[in-house]
Image (tube, rainbow, N blue to C red; front, side):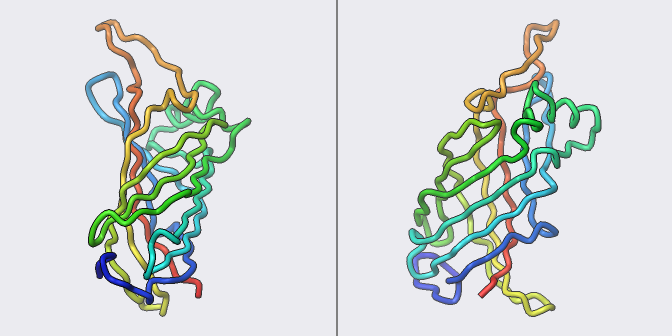
Length: 185
C-alpha cells in the first residue's frame, strides 16, 4: 500500500499496542559506545486518514519511570533530578501538529515533544510497514520511524568529564519508534 494513492480502508482511530510497540532511545556513553533503552509503559492514539494523511494525528503519553536500559543503577540515575526528574515530570508526551506525506510509503509527523517540562517541536519521519488482520480479528497497521534530538534542548544537561577529556553522556539522543496500532472503528 502506498500513501500516493487513496486508501480509505486505513481511515480510522487506532490505539498503540504496547505488547508489540517499542519506544526506544540510543545515546553515546563514555564517547566510545552506545547505550540503548526503551520506555515500557505508554499509551497512544492515532487518527489516520487514508485519503488525506494531512488530516491524521498522533498522541503518545510515556511514563518516565518506565525507562529501561537493562541496568537498575543507570535507570535510577536517569529517573533522578540529574536527568528526567520524574517525580516532578512523570510523563513524556508527544502531540502531533502536522502530518505530511513525503513519499509512497513515508510520512513526516511533526509535533510537540515535552520532556522534563520543556516542549520542543520535533519531526519524525515514518515508514508505513503495512496493514494486516491478526488471528484475533484486529486490524493492525505498522509504522517505523526515528529522529535525533539534543537532550540539552529539554533541560537534561547533567554530565561528567572523563579523564581522557571527553564526557560521559553524549548530547544527541536517537529516538526510535516501532509502532503496531490496532484499529478501534
